[in-house]
Image (cartoon, rainbow, N blue to C red; front, side):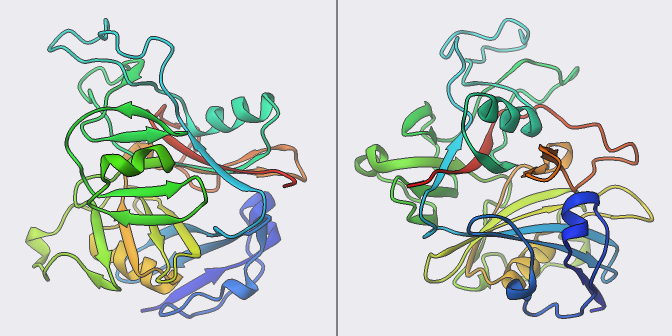
Length: 305
């Protein structure tokens, strides 16, 4: 596989390139620039098996003063949606762009430095402009249950002490100690113990190529990895399937991995302390600005603890 790993502070500022290397089996995090205390960033460009632009972060969950937060209950949580009448949908959260999620938290004094979209939601029907979202699986945000749905899809769980796991099971007895629990999308958990959770499939049976968001966790639980893959842009980035995500997550250092909401939802954002603004390296189309409001964002912020 031909690769170029782009590591640069120029990339942080302008998306530029300062260094190229080829090491698809193991990414060099030691050489990667920091985007915040305990967080490092790699822009990975793949030419094979197709064009893919990938944006990765590694988060040290043992970093002092590191905290997680996510989209909370809407102010009218539990009410019935009025802009979707095909069936009864109860409101869980207000849809917000990842950029706006970060800016709102920072405006209230939270030093949020990183945010990515996570769980899928409904309704997803024309005209796709519904203000709120509802989840089909259990969702916990900031220690509060956002969705009581009984389905326990594979989920990323981070406890209040920053211990994390990617699991299919979350007993009710553990929920009071959970900071966030975000269910995955589609295939859900795609890697466990360094091995794919699905059997080899012919090309005709693979999921379509698309923009993707995924998270991974190292075997010792110290490192959390996030990746956003651009897609559906011929000549620039075609997108990824589950095999691609497993390969990327293994290269990053993950033992377990989970697929999250993708497509136009996939957004990777961090706070650029030089420009004092939110920077989004991935692009949804050639015009860059088509960022979708999503029902669930995950944010990481730092304090001086």
